[in-house]
Image (cartoon, rainbow, N blue to C red):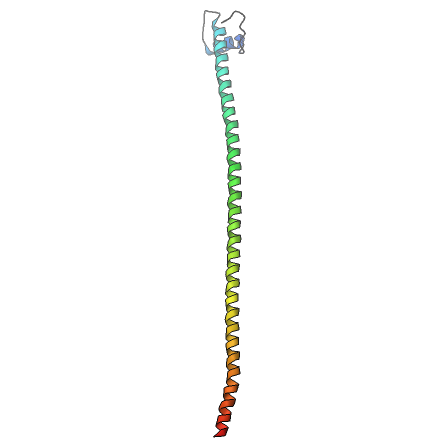
Length: 135
């Protein structure tokens, strides 16, 4: 240790802790050594705490990034679902219109054939009636 070294943990605190623990020592440098070891321990704890904090912050960023990614995906899925529903409704509308058109065409043909039968019936009936009257 350099001669002007002042540990963060005071030497008096180290001496008091050694005395309360019942540790006897002959060398006066022992409390200073214990203080420097305490400093080393505190520095290690501090470095580990900063590393944990950094990982936690990075993890937070990763969580936010993942949340944004899921949100974009959800929007895209909902947009695609809406487009599929719109296309389905349009297709059903086309089919309905086509079926209605077919029904109208069939009704029109049926009406025109019944009209032609009605027109043919009175003339044939009158011809038949005049033929029956002639006999």
